[in-house]
Length: 501
Image 1 (cartoon, rainbow, N blue to C red):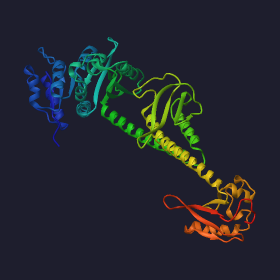
Image 2: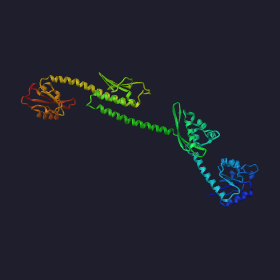
Image 3: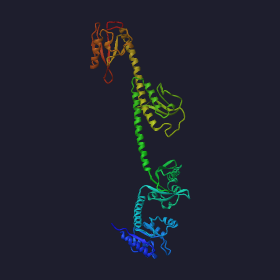
Image 4: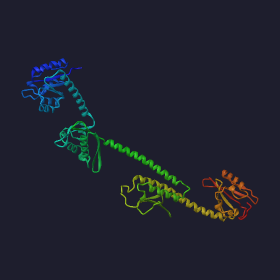
């Protein structure tokens, strides 16, 4: 480990020689004493000392205080003043050069060694902090409270702050407000910069560190974000550490939107599942199911009490339960296979703020259009049911015109239909026997008839049934795909009114 090199700048030769010998005994490397009459900044620089012990008054018009200031600023070498003068004026003037200590003559060895050790330690610490200040990726601004200006003045700006703000050392000595207005706040609207200055004031006054986020806005568009952390670093100094978080904020916003989209998709699917469950509730008439879907649409918006829905097709119209007059905003055709089946309309009763989609959000419109698709299938089913009902009425009319008793048994073995002739045989109305198991009918052949029906439903092959008065026939009833729907039973040799069955 190399020796610490201590340079002595002293105008009194005897004192200088004595100090040199004492320092060498302590283990320091002390170069030859310089000629004080020609001492200069360059002389000290040539020796490359680790520390300088400098007399404040060097005589012959040489100012030790001024020379010490140059050494510290230009060479970054710590200076400890040696002086026999301890008056406040001299010390105040010397203090402005940031000395690392004072030694009052006559000096004791312990005092000299302690001062050198402390000065070197302080210088090393400050050097590390300066490197950190210069290389930290965050912007750092050090401001000092100036009581005369009643404002904060810039004391230091690190390179990162200069890069971020395009304002460097030329701003040192300027007020914080002028720095901010030049560097970042020229493109702000509102009280963004004033809020930051107020934060700096609070930290200086109360000492509590405060974070602050500043948003740059121009023409109602966000240009970027800054995060500031303000803390009190000394009695009259406040340090402001900041970084540009625009990219981070944009990534967070993108993540928020993706999360929102995902949650919307989940809500959307959950809502559609509920709608599908309603649409598949076969125990409810189709118009009733559509009315439930209309009510669901009114509940899916932010102001359901003002929302109304109307669904119309052919000669039918279904309205939401709290339907009232309104300004129609949206109308969607009910389409299936390119054919228009009807119309779904929804809207609010009064004027609402209109965004680009009207008073409804894009998510609400997407959900409604999905519900319209469900309604289109229900309307198609309703039309099919109406056609089937028309055909059924024709079939019933034809079957009732047959004078021979007959009945239809479904695949579960229950009565679905009996004609008028069979009503007379049973002496019971159709409504009384409907859904009654065939083997429970008041017929002498009921048990045998039940067994025969089960076989025909299982095999799909017609069978005859022997009766005392003549044969009956049990035939399978098939749909277009050949599936057995039930059986048709008739008694060709039995007249209406006979009780022989």
